[in-house]
Each structure stands twice: as C-alpha cells, then as structure tokens.
Image (tube, rainbow, N blue to C red; front, side, top):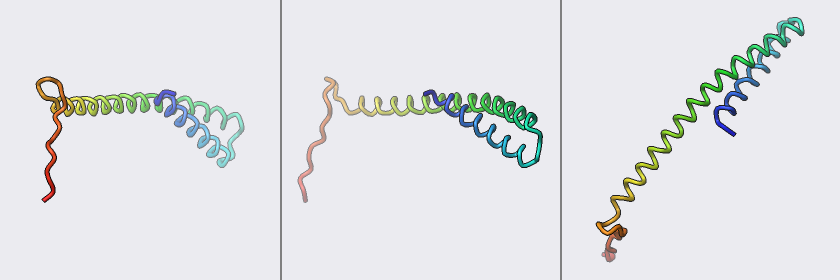
Length: 93
C-alpha cells in the first residue's frame, strides 16, 4: 500500500467519525450529519493524500541520502585495485 493512500484514508475516516459524533451530539438531523460528514471525509482525504505524498517524497529523499553516504564510505574503504582495506590488528598492550 502506498503511504499517501494510507494517510489519506486515515485522515478521511477520522474526519467522518468526528463529524458524525459532533453532529449527533449537536442533535442535528440525520441527513445534515451524514452530508457534512461526507464532505469532511472527502476534504480531509484530499488533504491527507497531499500530506502522504509529501511524506513519501521526504522518505525517499532521506533514504537516497543514506544510500549515497554508505556508497561513499564503502568507496573510501577500497584500495586502488578495488580490494577492501583491512586495518592491521593492534596487539594487546
């Protein structure tokens, strides 16, 4: 599952539930409660999708930076022939 879809779903369902509970507590008519809850659900789904897309982009960018850093450190540990540089063991004192 895509992160943006997950976040969007959570935002939408949370908005729907909170709107229904607020509408019931305010003693609004059933049609009014349901209509407002559906509008809130759709609006928050869109907002959640945008937030999830931004989160996905940030996570991918961060993972790429880490991968680049690891590749750089690996390259620094190779000699001119591409063999790993193994540090000499230090005898115990």
